[in-house]
Amino acid sequence: MSRWRRVWIAPLLALTLCVAGCGVTVPSDPQGTLERVRGDELRAGASASRELVSIDGSDVSGPLAEVVEDFAASLDAHVTWTVGSEEDLVDGLEAGRLDLAIGGMTEATPWSERVAVTRAYDTIPGVESSVVMLLPLGENAWQAAIEGYLDKEAAG
Amino acid sequence: MRAMGRTDLPPTQQKALRSAIRWEWFTIGYSILTIALIALVVGGSQAMRTAWIEDMLSLIPQISFLVALLFIRRPPTRAFPFGLHRVMGVGHLVAGVALLGVGGDLAYEAISGLIRAEHPSIGTVVVFGQTVWLGWFMVAVMTVTVIGPFFYGHAKAKLAPKLHNKVLYADADMAKADWTSTVASIVGVLGVGVGLWWLDGGAALFISAGIVWDGWRNSRAAVRDLIDQRARTVDDSRPHPLTARVADRVAELPWVRESAVRMRDMGQVFHVEVFVVPEHGQVRVDEIEEARRAVAELDWKVQDVVVVPAASLPPEAEPAGRQEEPAAQRRHHGDA
Image (cartoon, rainbow over all chains, first blue to last red; front, side, top):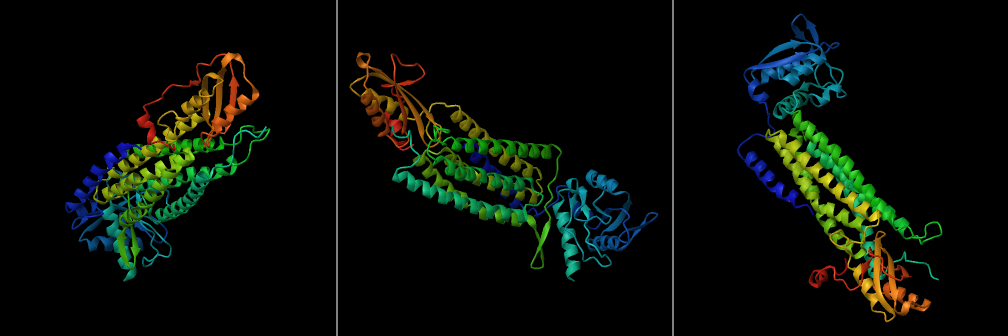
């Protein structure tokens, strides 16, 4: 049997446990999005979508936008909106210019290869359909914070 | 003349075969359960996805073993005069090529993910009103499923030499190494958990490299048997000692001056050609039959025996009286 597989697995496991034991939170953000946003600025992207997201000049409103504003407030952060097409927003998330994007995307969104997609929520006040938000790939503490917030809102 | 070779097994091998069949069905059931469990949590981790596909691939040797068994018990016919033993080798090759192809594809995915620095996303799930990180469930599922292959891997590894079945041996060998993949996927997920995104791709690469390695080894072994290399032990580590024993046994007969053997692995049983140079240049038919019987009595695997009287021995056949290896080394491989 191949011995090299066993040789490599022990140090890998030890390394992981050590890092995990050094007081790092799980899950965490490789880019530190959640910690950067907390008490500061949430850079959100918006793409117009039926009654969910309305755009008037640089003013973003609608039920989905309100949820983002409330979420930011729960982190003592303010929202800076960027308006664009879905592809612009996805590019922004990939390049690290945005922390979050909304626009009536659903679970079937074709962008899931390039950005992280939250669970689908049909509990957002004023929103009839089931929608998701788009986030940067791999910012898992950030994703857990948003999903946790939306779950809490849905429950309460 | 009786039909050549045999498609039935002596009692010890029948018992081992029944046991192997039970283990294979158990393994298939266990693997399907594992695959279904992992499907619930597979998420955005490349390491989890790779381990998941590996579990699916692990079904191929088991299925090809069970399918091949249906064929190899058929007696030889005019159309298939050597019996259908080679079906086992074909199953071995199919399993090997599948592992090689899919393993290569997974390795490519892992490497390109690492190069593009794709950070794996693992979200949350709601359990009893609590938002819980999905990674914890991945670790839990993988921890639960790591145990099974230990048991059936070792059980099958004990049965494979008794049956001289290389598909069963390969299956057992992969099961015994399966825990490394499971642990690697846990390392990958925990790595993502602490923010080391590359550990996921690294673990996926590690697992897929293991699949490619298994595929390469099995394809190579299967092809070599299908193109009739001399028979080797079930683990392919050395030439099968039966070759020398057959040659020696025939050389002991008083009318034989020299003998040499060509023996190929048909998958579970061997096909034997014995070349004999008779004393005084002549041989009787009942002497030939005596030689065939003497060889067949040596081992259940050597029943399909052809004895060819010849003026001289072909150089590629294994001559009698040549020790392949020290006797001490041979002892603990008695039933291989």
